[in-house]
Image (cartoon, rainbow, N blue to C red):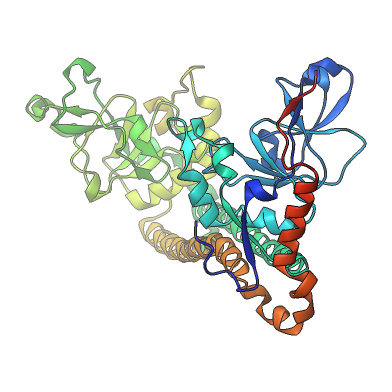
Length: 447
């Protein structure tokens, strides 16, 4: 990893040359009733260590203390760097999956942020052991050789403070942006509800409620034998291929085209409305979608319904009616089967909703499409903004460790970056203290 872009008054060292930590491991179960503050890898996401009795802690741990920096060894693609918080009434211990870095002469915030930079993460991920994914581990002996920048201590402190402020603003902006998709989801549902009640066009459809089976029929697919599936052929439209609002084909089964002559009526057409009958409701919503031209050709299979034979009912209006929460709320208690919830064709057609006159349906479809297009535009803008915000953290960190956040501060405070306050003097002090203490000792284990 190159640190050639750091300010000229900074120095470079290695993690091993600055790390004063001497590992002291022990088995918490030897202290059954003692309480510990455990910095485990799983608790990192919460931002707070676990408070546990020794008898409830599995495997050996290592003692840590306030301002120690924890760099996660396991699956380093996940950016996990943790600075140990101020000591509580309980002993602080950490998982053996942390590489612990301790150097009181370097500001803990400065070093913590550096270990989160993209350039350091790239180096860490390029030099791992293990076969891949969650099984990869950073190698402590290799990590000890990695370079780190050493700025004058007062400049380190200023950088850490600036990053605290700037990145808190980034996190706040991100949190607000992440709320908007849920707001838009509620907005779309409110539009759908207003559509089927008539409020969207300032009318009342209360007396126009009927079951949809009076206005539409359904096809249910065939049970094609899995033994006859083929590598080539026509894709089969199964429940697994339906997600809320779209068809997906990452898990596709095909059937020989020559064996489908008797099933031409089950071929899907563009804009057909498709509903999964097995497990129709998933965490992301109702498995209801319209077929696009890019989805064709495909063939309907069993336990998948396709709406057809519309009578005084626009397909677009039906899609609006089925997309609302009223249909989900109708399906939920009417499903049968405990392992795989199922809705029957008869139950689908018994769903009641308002079916207004043709002209009203047209106007509702127009208004819903208009409002949804507006919501889609906002959602796209929000997603673009989130992409920019997600890259902003690394951009700010890169600026910080090129010295750009403190350029003016350095110009205004030459005495705080020179002489005995210089980075070179700080590094010499670290070297002298480590030499006086005998350098880094080997790990010890406590019974």
